[in-house]
Image (tube, rainbow, N blue to C red):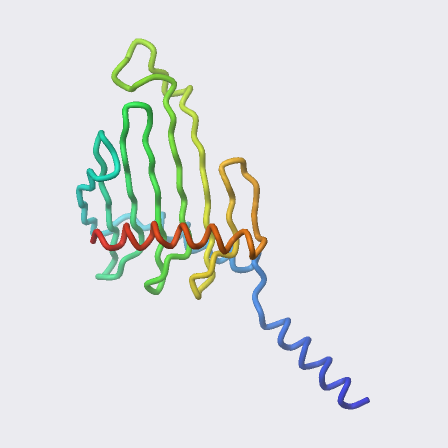
Length: 167
């Protein structure tokens, strides 16, 4: 009986110390807000014309020499793509990706209507070990299934690596 009670307390202790996905996401949201509320970043901009016919840039935001955020912007005549990478303790903890599709090429001022721009957003949430724990796709579907996340994680990590090598 003592062994069973000991094991029960041990399991409860382990489970209570592990953070749930929602707790981690809550912390990510707090960190995201803190990062975006800070206004005095040192910004380094690098041209990146390799990914778009209309050009692109990568902006590196640092505070006291520590990288906090990276923003990529790629432009095309039919839209633009903006991706924001949020960094804490040298690890990406959140990625916000938005693709803007214009109703007409931006240079056709007579029919271009900014209000008709379609925006497809994706959100990637990572734990402190760099594991993808939640993904929200362009249809606002939340994915937390580990098997599905492993494939998505592999792809986003390739993109992160590619962007951070440009610094």
